[in-house]
Image 1 (cartoon, helix red, strand yellow):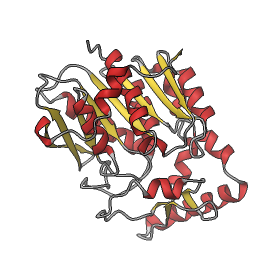
Image 2: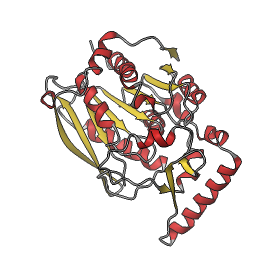
Image 3: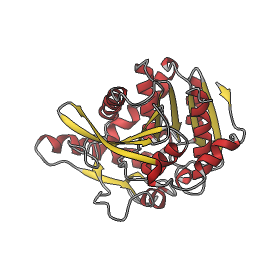
Length: 315
């Protein structure tokens, strides 16, 4: 791993700090791709003044939809000269299927998204994956399985389910196992059991760390019909999900962006992920899990664009 904690280059910072670009500067196009009989919905953002731009695929975190801020990032990437593709996992947004958060299922969605974007003839050869939180782990696993990915950005990544076990209380873990088993059994007879996606620290929710309630809620658009609940069987799957174990197989440059004050994904896990990735850079900032969406938005994105410029060989 190579350390990269310096201030990002002035040019990337300028390119992402000018606000949302005018709609005259980019076009959007709906894409779709099939996974196990369900159709996933995606949007291609393409700069009008760049021929054959390299592409960045963007995927969201735990139970989140593309409308929860990925459009803001896609538009800034367009301003920086990249094409960007946002997509919803099966069961979320306008994608078909059951809204079920299982890592193996979502990794399959990611791989299908890569295949679809690779088939777009008007894009360049360079392709990067950008994932946040749970998707920060997904992009590592996908890049470990494929050799047609040229760069990976893992923002505040969930990369080691064992750390989740260590961070939760025995009471929480016992309740999670009970809820997960109830969902598995109930699901067989059409009575699935659901839990909150986010909540206060004194509530039982998948994300109940300090700051999770306000941080997650701030991402949800006012007109969204998304509901704060998810199948409880997810709580059985997450502790077994360890993208860090696949990191050594990633053959492209990677960037890990981590918050030293992250209460959702402990900083130590991101540091271990960066150490395990063969050609990685680590940006560590004094921030929480959701700060890159608000107070640190431009700063974090400037680091990411600077990395993409170098990894994809932009002049």
